[in-house]
Length: 68
Image 1 (tube, one colour):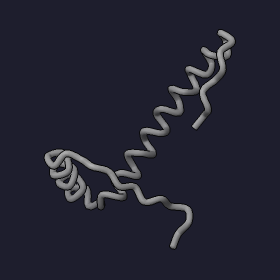
Image 2: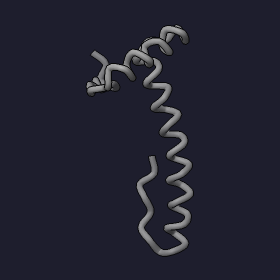
Image 3: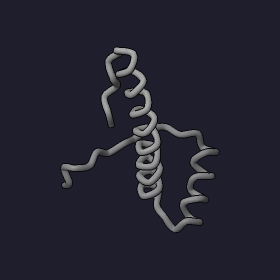
Image 4: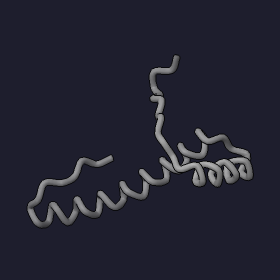
């Protein structure tokens, strides 16, 4: 078993899951591939946002947020 992975399990509204499955099928990707891609994009976008806030925090003497 791979130790660098974690199983994620969560509830999702049925209508969203149905639409998500259609998109995954269209893109010829499985749910895992698609969710990982979405999560990576989200982390990159939010990391930039956190970095901007950290700059503001440093300028105002507040404690920076932990970088991602």
